Amino acid sequence: MTDHRSSISALLSALLACALTLSSTSTAVAGDVRLVSDTMDSVCRVEITSGPDAPKGPVETYIDVSRNWTITKPDKLCYRRASTPDNCESGMTQWNTQWKCAASTSSKLEELSLQ
Image (cartoon, rainbow, N blue to C red; front, side, top):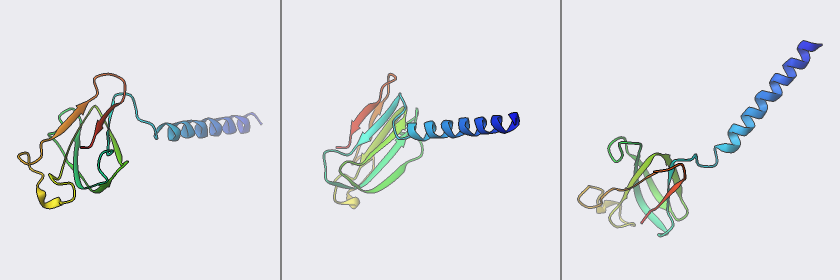
């Protein structure tokens, strides 16, 4: 009977741990940077790079980014967008659109507005 109770106790502990993990994934971890699209209705293309070496490193591309879109990355986040928000052919090179970056300098969440 004791083995049965300890198995149930272990199962309940595992379920509680899973529930706590799932509930915490929706909120940002301290030290993160969040990019928020809050100034334009739509941007045809946004490129994101993150991490301590950003803007060097792998680039993630997002298409048709609408108002209220967000993305959160740890440490440092850089972005650039099409020079003209509604024209993806307007260029994404460093000469047309400079990277804009924000880094978390403390344990709080930093926000960067997509402009």
